[in-house]
Image (cartoon, rainbow, N blue to C red; front, side, top):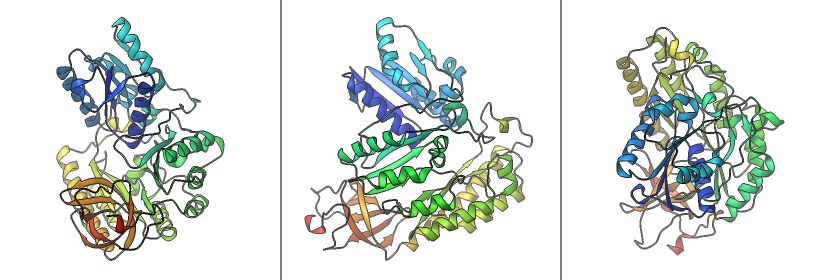
Length: 447
């Protein structure tokens, strides 16, 4: 039977989809990249915003119209955070959450046998263990995602994640090492370590994020290590010192901010001040050459005055981010922020978001301009497109080079590139002839 997966949300979801694909493949199912010829369709949902919930529901209805006789399952954060969501997903034959994903193949096969709608959403407990999931291939990607942490204990006042993912828990070091070694053997030279609250890796057994990076840093075949989104907590001087000693760790950090206003951060139940955040960013820049720092910024949180927004805006400007993701606050049912007074009207939230986004575009341009003249190793990921090959520098700058040979793909190869132009959201450059990159041994002469 053929099975199709549709994934919404973060890198953790992408990893989990790949792991579930592997579970089904082991049972003889054939993976499909198109829903129209699939016997089974699985939607891996996200619930970070109300819009995320809506997208899952819309996708479900489209799939049901397209494949009226297919078995359709909805899994992921949406049903887990809001168990009553199963009543809003009547088109789904199977509804399950984020816990016990290994049960999904059994649930599908039970439905195929009995044709009885199934809702399986077990609750998380205080001492749940990290669910053993692994994958040795991320279809369509040259970088491999490796989930090492799950859950969150912080309960930010706007967020449903602790309800959809449970408490913090981490992949055991031996399991982490084994999976990273398997990914290296599968041909991946770059790992992206992911988690729901990645900075808390190992907290429950006396370790920290540096331990995870050091394990990967010592594995033959792994040439680059990236970190997924980070919360500012737990990034102590000791952790930073150890991370900076890992030569394979890329100098790009997505450090979640949410607001540059101290009052708003407190209302959000974020556990840091703007000045503490600024200090952490400066420590990263001091330890990692050509470091890029990106972030998320929310506008229109309940009670955010115009003065509060300006305070946040000025702080973001001071930070000189390489890029920012801006979004207006979205009410989430079941969170404390839902019941807070002084909710901001939609027009004001979006006006502030646009102003912040404009600042983000200015900073992005300034960052790209700062890359002019640099020479760096680029791991090419995208196939030839519009006459260019494209890939990423260690600091996650996307760089394009002109195609010299229309029949030659550079995918998963690394070359040193000198940047000589910038575009709207990328840089352009040329390969340095005669300089073999440390990470592949392939020279420009092979083009």
